[in-house]
Image (cartoon, rainbow, N blue to C red):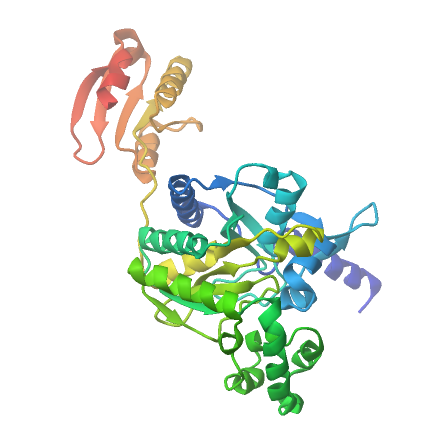
Amino acid sequence: MNKESCAENSAGMEDKMITQRPKGTQDWYGDAMHKRTVIEKMARELCEVYNIKEIATPIFESVDLFQRGVGETTDVVQKEMYRFEDLGHRQMALKPEGTAGVMRAYLENNMYAESGPTKLFYVTPAFRYEKPQSGRFRQHHQFGVEFVGSKSPLAEVELITLVTTLIKKIGLKDAKLHINSIGCANCRKEYNKALLAYLEQHKDQLCETCRGRMEKNPLRIIDCKVPSCKEIVKDAPRTIEYLDEECKEHFEALQSLLKQLNIPYEIDTGIVRGLDYYTKTVFEFVNEDGFTLCGGGRYDNLIHEIDGKQDIPSVGFGMGIERILYFLEEEKVELEPEKPIDLYIGILGEEAKAKSFQLVYDLRMAGFIVETDYLDRSVKAQMKYANKIGAKQVIIIGENELKDNKGQLKNMETGETKEVALNELKEYLR
């Protein structure tokens, strides 16, 4: 291939990349954007009832924050995090999850000095370099809540009831609550000894990543997705068998509250969650097909991991919005439709343009959804367009309508028309 051909091919590839979104991302518009907006609206309204305030943190932070907070041995940090060096030669990363950034903001803004507990929610993009698949993307969106400052299992119960309510409001089939306790650093020491003793017998069958985890954080092996490792760990010791008194009491108190509140649950000793900051309670909401819709738990040591000073208990969860949308599609659940267009104001002639748009503006300021013509279409084409966009009513304004200050308002569903004064359109639409 000659130089000219190579240059043409290179230019062609660049042009193709310019007009294609990056792999594992989505363009949000139309019906998908509407559905996402509805879910986010439901989440925000529910958080308002729970007195949980919204927080927004940067989409990029120091790499160190995620290494300390999320954990150096996690797949997220080792394999999936988008890292870059900025112009000041600082090592930065696009946020792979929402919790670490919220905790950094909590510390930096001295929120611990305010009356507690602190309850915060976020709707944020998150970035992970992983294989795109159903409901999983390299840029995805998370709804999450962080409840900071309480050791009580009531904090877990609050978030569990919030997730349960949201799933019902969205209209998905009931997802069952699965819970486990992975203990604290104290009981984890004994557990790690027992787990390592078991894993040593199967070390040669473990994947390379898990062999490395045996030295740094053997608990992560329980969460490995490699089939051979999953087969090995299914008979491994479980954290729940090694809980100290404090962790055992906390887990029993949580179960007692769930029973008293008639919240069904299942103890699932296979749940450890994929991030290092979890302690004690971990939970997931799993649908009848075995897919996780939401996951979270307690992380009493996370703030200490980040600032090295304070011990402030926390609990939270994260829910992937794309995953929820995927299951809505699978279960054929219909969300509330977009609001219809109340009125289409058609324009006939140059003289009518300014007056028509003044009407459009006034009606919009009164809260009505109104559209008009911007393309100098014929009346026939405007009527066709009004029908296509689903306008409930149509009025065409020309020279005569301006002179008489009235026009024919057409109901697009019934075909009926009614003469209405232009200055009374607002009252009539109400």
